[in-house]
Each structure stands twice: as C-alpha cells, then as structure tokens.
Image (cartoon, rainbow, N blue to C red; front, side, top):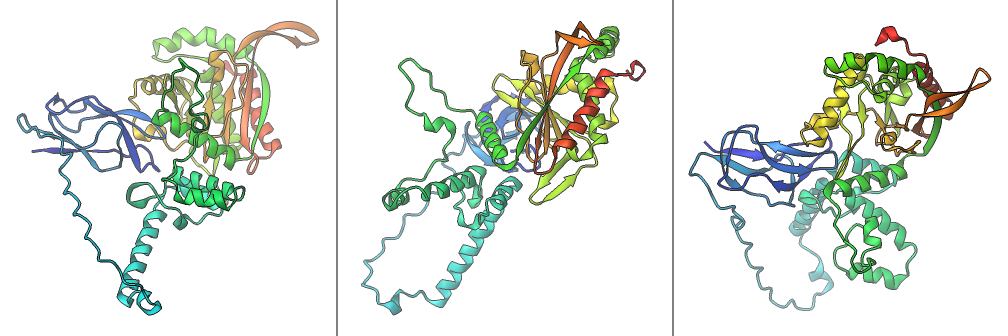
Length: 436
C-alpha cells in the first residue's frame, strides 16, 4: 500500500519548509527511517527519514520548492509502482473567457448588483482571514509597528503573510514618506517587489573574478531574524571578567572520569550549569515577551548556539535545571554532534527560554550577541586564557575569561542583569568540588 511522505513541522511556529535536496530519486529503494530528503527552515537544516520501506514511486516537489507543512511531497510504494513525477498532473487552467467590449458605463450600470457585492465582500473577508493566519512572529512585528495585516498582500500559501511580506511592507511605508509622487507611481507600476536583503543593496558591484553566491535558506532566515531582533529589543550588554582557576583545577582532576562516562567536561559545561542556577535565582532573565505581556517560564530550556559550515543553529537542552553537571555535558556533546550531521529532531530546536553562544571557541575575547527572539537575554562566552591579574596585591597568572550578557532593556534593568552576572561569576570562581 503506498505511503505518503509529508513535509514535517520543524518547530511550533513553522508553517513551511524548503526542500534543499532529494537524497533518494524516483525508483530508488529506501528503508524505513533511512534519510529521504533534506529540508531547511528558519530553525533547522535536517534530513527527513522515510516513514516506510519500499521504493520511491513519486516525487511531487522539486529541490528548491517551499511547501507547507503536512503537504505530500513524495510517495513510497512497493517495487514496480514507480510513477513519473506529476509535474503536469494539475489540470490546466481553462483559458480566460474573451470578454466582449464593455459599453461606456453609466453611474447606475457601474454599480455592481447586490449579489455581486455580497460575493465580493465574502471573497475579501476570506482573503483577509487567510492573511490573518500568519505566524506569531509576523503578528508580533505587526503589533509593534501598528500595521494592519489585512492591508498586506501575502505571498505565502493561500495568501498567508510571511515575514518577508511584513518587513518589506514596513520598509516600503518608510520609503514612501521620502520619495516624491513620481517615485510612488513608478513603484505602483513596477513588477512585484522583492524584499530587500543586505546583499540586494550591493548586487552588481562585484569586481571581475569575484564569486557571487545566492544566500542559502538558513543564511537568509538568520539575516531576517537578526534584523527583526535589533528592531524589536532594546539591546544592552554587560561584560564581567571571571577567574576560572577553580574550574580549571576541577576540570583537570575530573575530565578523565567524565570521558569514561561518555561526557566531555569543558569550560562551557561549568558555565552552562552556573547559568542554569543563576536563571533560577533571577527568573526574569528566563522570561520572554509576547506583545505587551511578559511570560515567566517555569522550565529552564537553554539553547546552545552551534556554528556550522553553512550557518548557525541553536539546539535546546530542555529542563536543563533538572540535570547535573555530567548530564549537561552529555547533552552538550550529543546535540552539537547531531546538529553538525543534520540529525536534530523538530522539538530539539524550539522552546528555548535562554541562549548561550560561545565565540571564545574561535579565540574571541568577548562578543556582543543579538538576542534570540522572543527571549530577553543571551550569554556570550569569551576565550579563557592565562593573563596577569592582581591577587592579594600581587601579580599572578590566572586563566581568565569574559562573559557578556546581552539583554532586553524593555524588560531587564541593569541592576537585574548585573545581579544575574554576579551570581554566575560567584558560582564559577567558588565552585564546590563536591558538586561535580
């Protein structure tokens, strides 16, 4: 019996996904749970396994197509059930009827009949309803910019308003106040507008020999999210210097034991555990914003930014406050490894309440990270290196590192941010070996 393969929902607010490549082709045999195709969304790149064993009998979406979740993209059948991908299976649209030249309309004739007006009103209401069915992020942006979503012509499925649509609409509104009537009329008669991305502004400026590559889906979505976050949150950063001497001693003594237990004990392991405890002590940092309300989360779900060759992904350690140091170390290694091999599950890249990013792994002293919306704070970890410091009025060499908290000043005041960072610093500098 044929089995439909559907586009999975890769996160709570995800409505569509882009097929990056087909790993299997029509006629190929496939086992259950064997990778079938690869998708990209604004949260994750992932390989999607086959729901059944058999032969790929039909592929309904091409590489590069963006399709809504739960739509059928392929069919798995028994051997010998191969079909040609039905590119032309859709019934051709009937030719538009040739309309007779309309006579000059009088004011009375120009008014539509009541039934026509009713149908038109019904159609408009339906279209507005489709546009209103947008993602929470789109509605959030609309609310913050006082934009009526029904005014926007959606380019998504069934007229759904996407982030591209609303960001472009907001940008166009701002430009209309700066251009004259000629510019406005030209914009009205131009072809459908492409939402400007940073690369669009420098298109065509490459020198001979330069390589011009289109942004990947993930790279484009990251760019959109960063712009939205900068527009949304009042970003402020606090930087604390931390003495990692105590942590370094414990790590050196315990890392072999952790490796035997299948975990890698790193500085990030200690920082993650200390941050989780600090989030419990200062719960406002573990909050998120929804319009004009603040949500104080019961669970501590920490996202860890993982750098990939093709972008950045943030898998989430759920209920991190219920794990000890070895449990967090195992989770770090597991999620980072599966992120790099595109083996993450949808639920592992959603639901975060706080994020940690580690630019120090590449040698940066510290960074000024951008908040991962709708969260209100993000912790940046700098490189831990030996530096001369003053200890008891004497100069000593100690492993030192900078930690940066980026926070949303709409919700978190400087005193609260510094309270959180002070709690984190004390925990790392006075770590109790008995808790390892």
